[in-house]
Amino acid sequence: MLDAVPDLDTLVVAVGGGGLIAGMAVAARDRKSDIEIVGVQTTRFPGMVNAIKGTHHVQGKSTIAEGIAVGTPGVLTQEIIASKVDDLLLVDEGDIEQGVLMLLEIEKTLVEGAGAAGLAALIRHPERFKGKRVGLVLSGGNIDPLLLAAIIERGMVRAGRLARVRVSARDVPGSLAEITATVAEAGANVDEVHHQRAFTMLAAQNVDIELVLQTRGQAHLASVLTALKDAGFEAEEQH
Image (cartoon, rainbow, N blue to C red; front, side, top):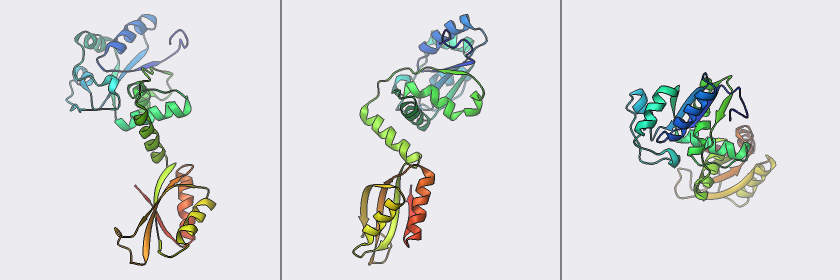
């Protein structure tokens, strides 16, 4: 990395047992003594952070970053990290999910959860790295296809590109057609439709229609809701 980009300011490396970052720290310090080295752990497996910083973060039982799900830090690596690594940061599961999705969508690069930990740190702590030239280590691409599909879908929901909308309407012929036509005219695509007649507080002649919509983002979703309301329907996003 330093051969390719000699003026890197910071290296951000995922930390499990500490072997990867310890080796990189030794090599990087030899090449560029003033380079900043930052380690990243998930909040569910903060063993190295606790050992180095003296904190007492509670360890969880599972994480999508399985490659760094290490409960007990290595003895030798802990010593190297304490002397050669500048900082250790924690990231949440959602940060890692977003990192996986961003790398896939923007860089067309597939990584596993642990491989996205470095980018997750930038997502969680943007001010910490503002204005710096940062090198990220993408450490592994072994991700289960079903997990990847779930991460993509959840990411689309967070971005508003996949949204669940509840529309209240009269339970008469043509209501659904009018609703879907309004959605189509607003430029959204209907992914799923569910009628709810029994489990609702509406009057007996009314119906709740739950739509799962594909949109272009939050602004587009807002315009779809406005179009439905302008057409005379009660409509709101469901979270």
